Length: 188
Image (cartoon, rainbow, N blue to C red; front, side):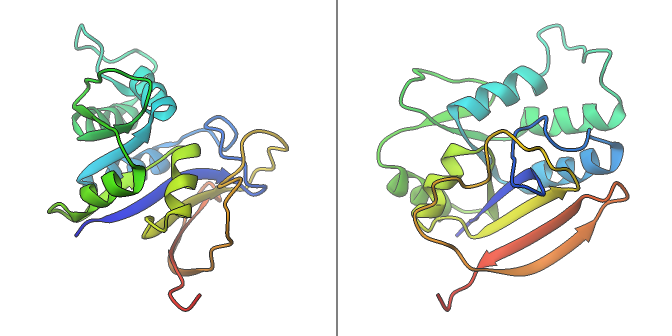
């Protein structure tokens, strides 16, 4: 059975907008590249899928944009080749090594978790909240940036019940960002 890990960058005040934290550096890009390579599949909602595709899909001409450095290209190549599952009721088809996930969210994600492999990774804002409410997230991995955004979407806004988590790993980047990986506390 595969575990489902929710991974996202977040500011100290809980903002999870992709532009709210520290600018990506080589260390953080290497970290996210390793995460992409470790996962058996990536689970996205429509908005996150379209945002990631527009930023990280290999251009049709095969040449990465000039703004990309070596660590950006390594990340782009990892996510470009990763298997993707897209939860959407509005998209009619997807490509970029992706398949649509339709039907009952709990049933369909449960089916993906039952498949052979080690882990699935979910990112974004709305879909992870629904998955957390269903008790389907096995690990939460937050890269907490030493920034107060004061605006934007907040992490797991609207969660129906509080989740008590046990920290299982912690790592600090040179930038001051801290990776905190937790699992739901089974005693709640």
